[in-house]
Each structure stands twice: as C-alpha cells, then as structure tokens.
Image (cartoon, rainbow, N blue to C red; front, side, top):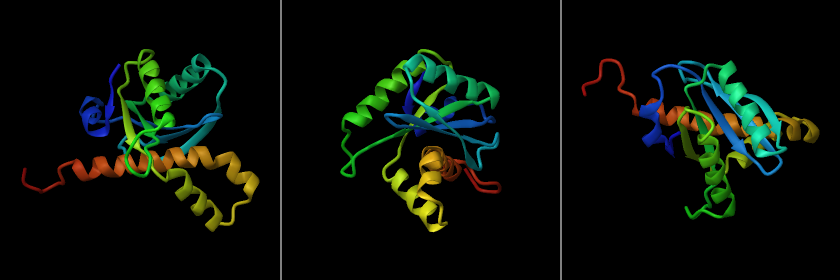
Length: 162
C-alpha cells in the first residue's frame, strides 16, 4: 500500500521481478512492463478507461501475469515543476489503487514523455491511425525506461567501492 517517489519506493520492491509502467490518460491507460532484471521496458497494451474498479482490475491482472514487483506511475508535472489538476488526479488514482494491492507504487516525473514518443513514431513514418493505437503504451514504456535507467545509475556497479 505504499505510494511515493522512485527513490523512496525502490527499496521496497523485491530485488528481481518485472515493474509495470503506467501512463494515465483521461480516456486510456498505457501499460508497459520491464523484464525481471529491470533492464528494458516494452509496451504491453492500452487499456480503455471505463471506471476505476474495472481499470484497476485489468492493471492488477497484468501485474499478476508478469509476476510484477511493483508499479511506476507517470506523474504529469508542469514544465516549471508545479503540479496541476492532472498531477492531482494521478496522485488520487495512485492512493486509491494502493488500497487494492500490496505492490509498492512509485511516481515518476513524465514531463514530455508523450511528445517525445510522438516524435519517435513520426520519425519512423508510422501512420497517424497506428500512432493513435500505440502512443499510450509507448509513452508508458518511455516513462518506465526512464525510471529503470535512473535505478541502474543508483545501483552499485560490479567492482566499484562502496
């Protein structure tokens, strides 16, 4: 039932096990997952939002399928670092979701994730219709990969002195 920053939550996760990345939108939730060693994030699916209970049930089912150790939830912070209505809505979702799972939930700054992914998909000449189908799960993977990269920089490197 823990929700907090990546640095606060990471020690609560089991040492191995997939992490589930979430990009909360008003109409959809992009879902990504990491490998058990937490090196690489990949898009899994886009969940069409209906109601909180149904959405949460699907997310928990995906976490169970992947034997997940926790969640990374993109927090839409404004460019100046302040939090607006979308960030407040995300925090409320995280608090309510935490009541339904023992898996710790880390909030991760997702500034510009969707814009960055949109540019990448345009660069590979993906059609507008196909981009609309996959943008959310790609954004979730982008968010999760950023968190994984941050965790990797924190981990002691083999042969390094503590």
